Image 1 (cartoon, each protein chain N blue to C red):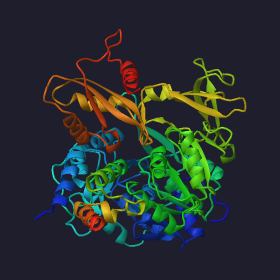
Image 2: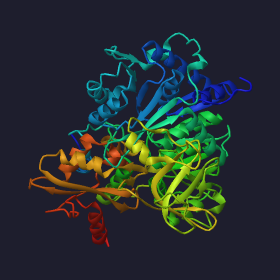
Image 3: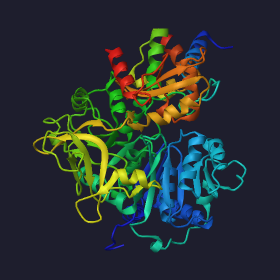
Image 4: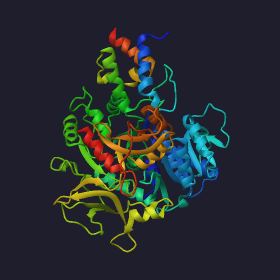
Length: 523
Length: 83
């Protein structure tokens, strides 16, 4: 193990298992697993994947909620030399089928409770040769599938040859909403992930003494990296499934003496609504991070009052490079509206339409350079060429984030707006087009537009504006239809019926005008 | 036989949450969280309903799954609060 170069993501776990074999790596519900247990379990599952035909470069979809089996699955896929793709467990069968077909997944690892959705999707995706099912130990063997529990009970696996790959190999495909309404698979190599995780754990000053509590879905890169970074530094990860009962999470934070708490603004808003939260009640929380959207300054102030010994990091990122910027906590008082500077080892700056750097104060697009920038979108060269453009060095690809920013005189960056119509709700990116596509499939919907409306808790709430030819169609019919086809965070909160929608000169529905009308109506 | 309290809770959950998911019924003992019926904003709506409907004050410390994660648990909690 001495003098080993960390090149691949599975080494995070292998090295921590070597250094801290008996230390608790994951706490999930009543289960507590050591690094060695996670390492050995993932060796066994990797061997089973290999035996069932998963080979180097194959894509394996992990379709489950936050649980220890998901951590084992991620590392097992990597140890098998394959590429993991985490999918939100509230994804419906038709979209899951689209994703399985898009990446031509070789295998799927899922839960017994999601099996009916998974089966429907797999029926349309012939590439999927194998399903591994968690929680089916007491059920009859699944046709063409294996039980997760059986995979782990097998004989100790022979060590995987370390030569299974190098850091240029793909490690992960993570899907993100695209403005076309079809999700795009962001391709991340081992090198990309190692670079991003190393940079982030450096500025957060993570150590093996850290205990992070993650309630964000592991299908979301912010949640996923909590897993990867804890395994990298040898910290303990407390995995929770939901923030629905914040007091239960606070009780867990106290019981486990949590030191790191990643939040999105929606969770911060919910915490701040709690009546009995006392300043200084959780002195062991060393840091709180926020990303996905900016915290309102009033929330920053209140969080600092409630957690006076905690450092608060405002951050900004896009899935295409994981994280772009962070604000060193010492700067928060001076620049509460800033998302800071480029993360260590990377560069972030603002350019005009011609790609030239703009002076301080001028609004332009944020671009990113560094080893964390994605390889492109899976089998989508046109979208890849729009996002990755030639950079300053020969052969280099510069990431265009699609977000408008400005910098102050000291170089600190401020988010201004998105260039496209993507809505940020509960910290997740949502494509209005994807929801509109679903709305058009509902009988009676003649025209549909989806916009975001400001919401104190959600950041933006999703609103569907619909022209219906069916007078009996009601808001709850629309919401129920969406619930059958979309992930939870995409389901509209509000539905408005209109006689007509405004159009552009070319006859397209003018979403921006609807947006403006909706804002006026709210004032 | 269901009590009046249980019926009111069931009605609220049917009217406000059930139509958001692809199903038509929920049993008294079923976890609302596991069933995907409530999320963090749903819990806030539920608490507001309980406070308005039954005149109780839900303390933060009581906003835990043990009290609020199924129709029977909510009913037992309300009976305890109003006893």
